[in-house]
Length: 277
Image (spheres, rainbow, N blue to C red):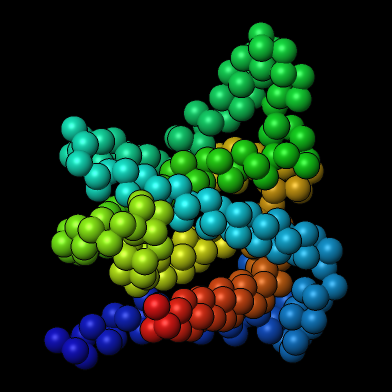
């Protein structure tokens, strides 16, 4: 069973990756003839203002979204882990956004940001929101963050709930006897004991948000202008529609290395914190 599995893995994973790496050293446009250009594509990427803008937007979006998702998900998980009524039903409700199509939800949020929210703001006299934030180059990324956080919270909440349920209730009872308040119990008991789940959530969320694509397509299409053009969207647009197949393949190779380095760095730092606590 190992050899067929190895052949399938090589055919559908390794071979396409190696083929892409090969074409990143050419000037192939996705059709026609091509020539070797060496490291030209990689060198030109560092001089490409459009690529730099995409990297800045993607990192700004990913950092903000990762922090918000983990803070909100942990708060929701703690609430759902408490002794409340309809606990199971509420858990299912909070998980629903995660199983919905990002594109469909994105189009709904597009309507909310474009029509519903400005109408409400006009009635309430909030001038700053009377126009769609998706049409503002300085605020459009906020709309993408809101959609991404709303959609991702369900999955991260589920992971935090799994961690919270591994904590023995007797620890909280002992903490209460010692006079610890809720915040002290969270700081001394809850957070240290769910440290591995915090590590997993941070790494998965950051990786997922660095690869953002659907949310941008559904909400802004990369606009206004190119203010919300993520790296994945740039690779897709340039590679498949812009005749830059080899050039954007080089971009994809660099971005793969960037994501790999960030993920390994996160794992190292966060796992070290797990040991310390």
